[in-house]
Image (tube, rainbow, N blue to C red):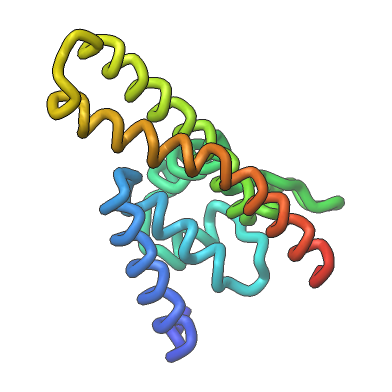
Length: 159
């Protein structure tokens, strides 16, 4: 298949997203799949289409799409009359990511509180770093639910 300028730009974008997600601790291939699913047409892609577009093995695509499904970013769908599975970004994928971050925020606040308990007999200066961590994550834990709710209302209004 001849690569068009548009395809090349989309592949380059997918690679850029892959590098970004690799820096966040995900694999580059998982990020490349996310990047491709953000710009591909049609938005549903078979494993073969993903492998061809990303110049990757079907095994790599398979394992990374399973991971992305577990993370709630990608979903596997079937199309009536077709035997192949298709993959696409999950509806409201980024809202689900933010909701998952809220769980992480709570856990980090709880860990900071446990650290403060460990240092209960220490002077305030020794507790300062943990207190800052706890206060920051407590703030985000209070504020993020309202922000997510406003986003959900906004995205539904604009739908």
